[in-house]
Image 1 (cartoon, rainbow over the protein chains, first blue to last red):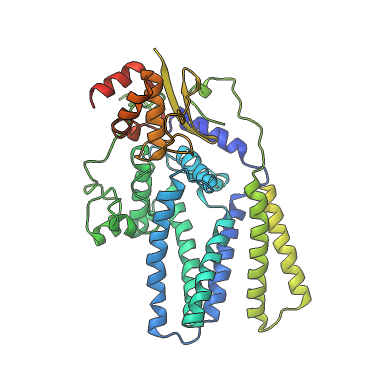
Image 2: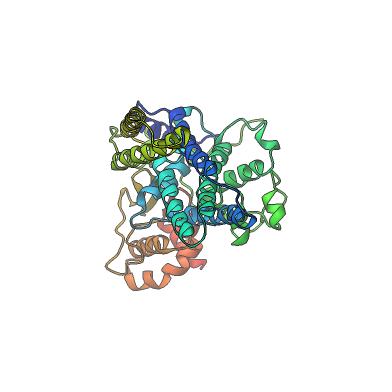
Length: 253
Length: 74
Length: 96
């Protein structure tokens, strides 16, 4: 249930969205750019060795830790030079979506669900720079696998994040990993823990590794937790001095 | 535009929309990125250097995307 | 009694005292150049703890000494939008 404050924020935020913005075009661009990069790289990989294929899990793990770090230390902390990201995330995304009402209503709301496409270009440029180094010291195949994996992980991130904020979960709740990240991320939208816990958006591996998950389980249990709440830590903080006086009252029987 | 509890009082309207500088920079970045990707994909499909028409189409597409990013303030 | 309020919004994390911006007290100590923040332990919340206590107690040295435990016990748990008055701050200080 939405509070009046959240509703007021949504109204104000939506009033700021440009008339020419279109959520479907936004999403199409993200997946066109990522898909084109992935397709081009895959087309140019020739007879990769097992060692070169090992680049895939390495990139997956690296991207997972990078996503955790960026979320925890940049998106949730005011840092010089990165205030735009912090404002867009902590001061907008987390006011628009709360643990009480974490779902978007229309495709116009994609403006605050998905990153702007230049974030993807920046990510691909970073991956390409690393790949160039890999191509110099190792092989072109390994470099192409690196960029393809990075593009795949970026699209994975955006898709999973959308799955967290879409209202209808009839299918999602049955899909392993997706159901896990959905519960994990909606819990992250609780103000009391949003600055410190559940920072992964794909697979909660880094949250498990660094002890920032809100569930107390082993690695497999954390990754495949689904909607299960039995393992949620009992020592999680609660917010105090809330001025959100318009929080929903307990509905009458 | 702080959405404070006090702002919840009726009669207070949000300030007029202003385009962010990020969408201007982003427009150029995305246009350039799209153009490069277009060239790479086109060269892969045609199996060599793409024709001038394909390159021009790529440039037009990239400019259109960049302009849309700015107009949509994305 | 003064009323302190804070709220995260599109233009930043805003903190007021009786409706006016709360001075950050950077002349006493600069913990953060990036302004106030809360709901975690760090430089922004530390600056907010100092500013709140300095304004409430009127004693910069005492405020500075108490800012760390006050941040951990109170500021690190504030909601997106919060409101405190002097009595609540006194009660929180007494409980430290």
